[in-house]
Length: 477
Image 1: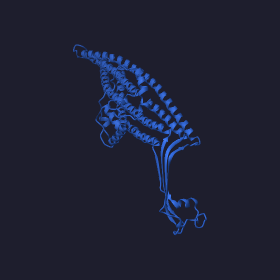
Image 2: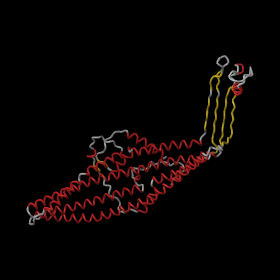
Image 3: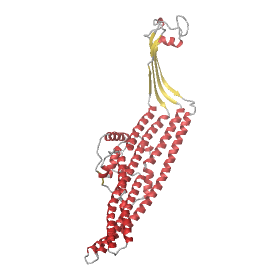
Image 4: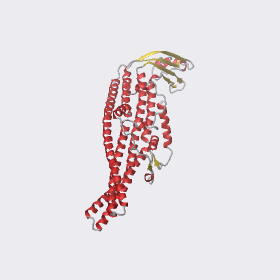
């Protein structure tokens, strides 16, 4: 069963969580997801909730099984004087097997649905955690790539500023041009200050999502290398199918719908407490024969008086003689009035089911809006990528031409060096625009996978191959 497989996974995760290991120096996105599935506390908590749901299912199913009550009262009965006192023992047993109880089928259904609610909650948690890891991974990689490109931009601005300073010193340049170049140089240098900190923030978030506890003096944040480029994906996205897929497969939507069905079943269970229950009962009593009569009347056969002073004499009691009675047969029990407790519980649970259905429909409608937002983000990023890509290609051709001009000995080398530095700087600015567009597209694709619930469909996140509970398919939305 799914339950057994997930519980086994829970034990593995608990064992793995106790092992100490250093964070990997090279971290791939899929490896980060695998580690999170084992160590992330939110995922492990959601996995443990399945075990809670399994226990609740057992409790709900208990209504169909027989009850057996055993009572063995015993003690000493007699006056303060031990001459007329005696020890006694009584055996009482009651066995009851329900034959008709409307709570039974709905209790079974509610228990199974409770497990499904916990399973849907687990996959919804996995989807959210993997989405957070992907966004943090994209943010860290963006800051890394930004530092590389902007570092070259700083060098280009330094070259331009140096050339303009030489031209001004030679009397062929203007001071305003050098000042403008100096401002651009300081701007590019200042832009290199925040990315290292933003990268560390993203890496700390990844470490937290993976369940790692980094030491205060850990060098992992400075040494780790992120090896995957998550901005690459299929170019064409079918948004109509994405909306249908999200409404059908989103675990949080399925959770709310399944929770509504469970509350409907629990409402019937609550109301059924007012209906008759038919059971087959067996009742056994074994008591001392004489004590039964004497204890029930508290009449002293010797004196004929009653009260605490009228205790049977030892001649009236035969401790070695027991009277055993067995009664069995069908029993009908009907709780005719319970102060409207069952009716109130039924109304409250039914209202809760209605609220869950409303929340599920609202979330399904929100999904369509989210997919449209992602569609707009992807179109904007694709257009900017296309435009910046062609501009980068043109700027790179200009840089190559300037480099060839710079290599020509017969031309003015000072002017050529300045032109080359300007062209190189312009090309790098366009590369930064292209970089931002590429990572915006990557974030939009990550949001699309989250909205449609595709994150848990990665090749390493698969439900254990096992048998579903009986009739589980009919409980699914």
